[in-house]
Length: 431
Image (cartoon, rainbow, N blue to C red; front, side, top):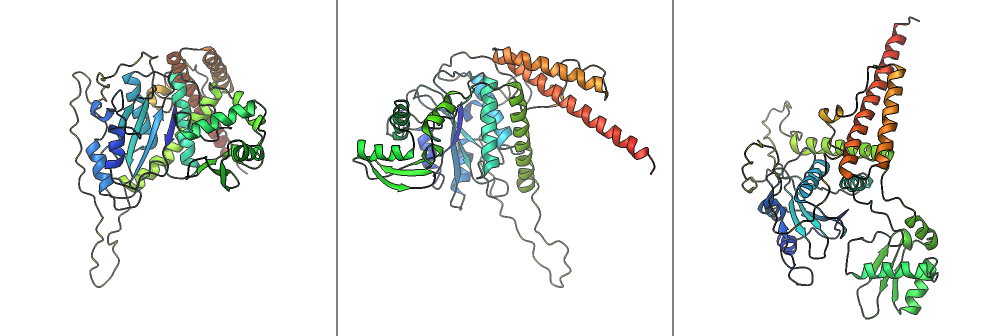
């Protein structure tokens, strides 16, 4: 599984992206099987009309963000797993905001043989009219997407996306494009020992393929294939002046495809920090925005209060009534018009740590804040890690992951209590 934000889009009306998602492909061919609008099959997401309304009423230059969660051909999903991914997506990238604040349009494509979950997000929050960006520029946002991708792959039992440094940021699932063909050709020539660095590559493109090199930068080259007029920019570590292709090929082949327990804990902690920072930002700017009305300044003349530019209420789609006996909890996806291959059942995502999960691990004993208590937890943590390393069933691995997180939280609490106890003892000592 790979998550990708599309660049150089988002400036037009809603008609373009929605027509593309629900209509024909970029070559004008009918998609087979037909696209599936997932919003109509869920009870806890916004509607296509709400997304279109916010995009078309946004007077800013950038009006929407689009992207995709793409799966390999052999990565099969069940409807419930798709629903879980969409729920995890909102909890990670739109924390504190529901579909009445920022609706998301979800459309599934399967015409390439693999499953692709496309999302379209307005760049405006509905209740305040303020600018909103689900994928703001900067390393913090990029890290959040990377952490989400890694933990979702681990949760679903899929292999991690290994960075092929030679392809240099080419999309693994960007099928049928010139970039994919160029990257495959490059890898083939490196393996054949014909190209060793960027200088070799430039000579090969110019003399062997008769391509024109239109521009060269620190980390990119722009080339124009024979018979074409528009240049293609090849950017990334593989196109820097000091790139060593043989070394990159070796690094790519040795990269692990499965996370170990320590990596999971580290990535989950990073993900939680990213979600917390984004939650605080969303609550401050959209849920409890500061008031700029008259703040009691003692002017002799009455100063009119500044009116907030509130967007009219978004026409949300009618939510379907919950199934009997399920209360108000999110409903599973209905039976889709396409068949899904059976896959392993998934559990609660790693980042959904709540009070219940915190007590779902093994018994932690009565060590309290003593050293023997932490030693006991350390032993249990080592045991769970060993089980995770040998466990092949994704469902069981997810359960062990939850236990591991609970044990780690308990240990952190115990260490904190020990620290506080020491401080109390030190404070009792009079100078």
